[in-house]
Image 1 (cartoon, one colour):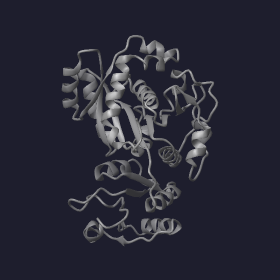
Image 2 (tube, helix red, strand yellow):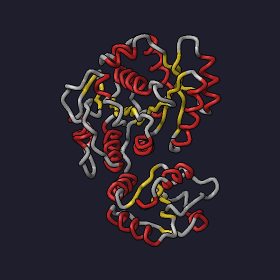
Image 3 (cartoon, one colour):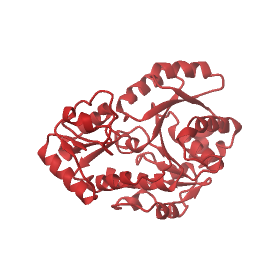
Length: 346
């Protein structure tokens, strides 16, 4: 079902749904939509919709046009939309999304990691969680979502590992085969990774549709997908919306808590939790920081001496084998166990 009074938007979505082999009920507003809301397989709303019927589930997709700019993403967050489709660029993605929704496949957990402030340790947390999940037997992919982060592969000492990087996927279009993607990606520490190159070259643009296609394939090909999102606006917009859960890493400091609270306003309506980075004995401070930020606490990431230099030397995964790190990662993965496929992390 599509809810919009915009004639042009109606026509665009009707063509997309027809191409996907589906049928579409079109209504003008939420009052007319209310009787059909819960029975519809998918609910799409246009950018003219500003509120939802009371006690109804969030729409699957907010649909708008490219000229509407950032307001689409803010509206999507306000409505709790699961996805945002900016037409015409996202037409192919929307057709594929609707096709899959009629015959959904089991998929893995896509876990996004972002820092509540600069230097919070999000990349470290992402690498350690991916490493721990792989050691527990899950098929894991670690995704570097920040083209300006210097290249996650450097922290893994894997810049020479053969396999695809983001620039190799910049021109990819349409559906990506999950097995082919998995076979083409490099491996480090027992898990696959998709990184930006650790070079001085300016990274190419990868449009949100391609990002969505890659993450869709990753979800179908892996049991756990850990996304190191970073804090830049573009990765937050393009990657965070495709995550099932988000973890915000914050040092146990007042200033960091304030920065994290501001960041929450930019996050999509995805279930989120806090990871506090701190020294031993910081548990009480962690609870206070979590309360001030307004997110549940999912764990305390230890400050391991030498982690910064280990990252520079490509030995981040060596630090991940320490007992304190293993305990942290196991506790976080344990809290996420309900979101993982049956058989994961055994």
